[in-house]
Length: 314
Image 1: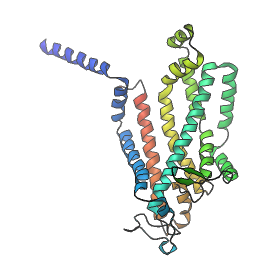
Image 2: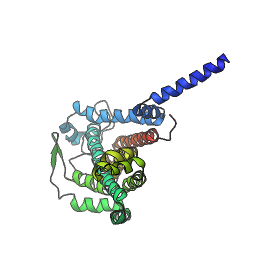
Image 3: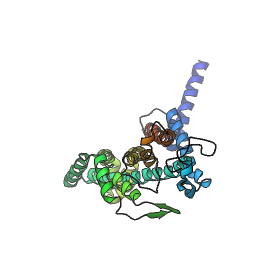
Image 4: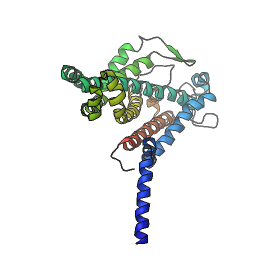
């Protein structure tokens, strides 16, 4: 009997400890149990440190410095990643190219989230004719092949934007074009998810109560419904960064993406395809970095999805 009583007490104590956990603590507990997500988070931190911390030791002028006497040199102590066709150090260019690739990914994902949440929230909350119009527009956007649109728009607008200056760096105007195009062609899935959540949540008791006390629609959307849809938004944002980096690599590899002198991992691959066999270091290192950052972000997104899922066992 004493053993049984002790077991009951221990069980109740464990339940009380679980109840006492805050929402953030429960999310962190679920996330850290996802080993691949933790590995992805660590790898992503290291990659960010490599790209942004490496700039403290290597200047952009050195990354763009050409020395034809050193062209196509294999990896060595002086050039750990080798040199390219005009003698530029590949290690330095992957550092600064990684900054632009990540900047494109984050910026495009931001546009994707803003447009997707706005369209989904308006369609799901107000319904009716507005819902029909927005969803028909969303379906129309689905029918446009993203890669085809990227290629056409990048070709047409690549030279329409002047160079921009950010944090002491000069970036070709094609960066802005790529970010905008990727952002405005990637929001449709998120809009559908947000719309579905809004359709479900707006019928809940706490929303009806908010209407009853005279809360304005904008306040209900921003304070009551939107915070309850944050989980799919965060997951979509993380995966959107990876998709944007891949999309930029696609079109840059085809020569229609970010234009020189701005380096990205994608346009470094474009300059390496003629030397796949003779100078493999030109594509191995930027290609490996793309694979690592995309895998890391995808693992991180999977972990966040499971951690933010209320049905997951803590």
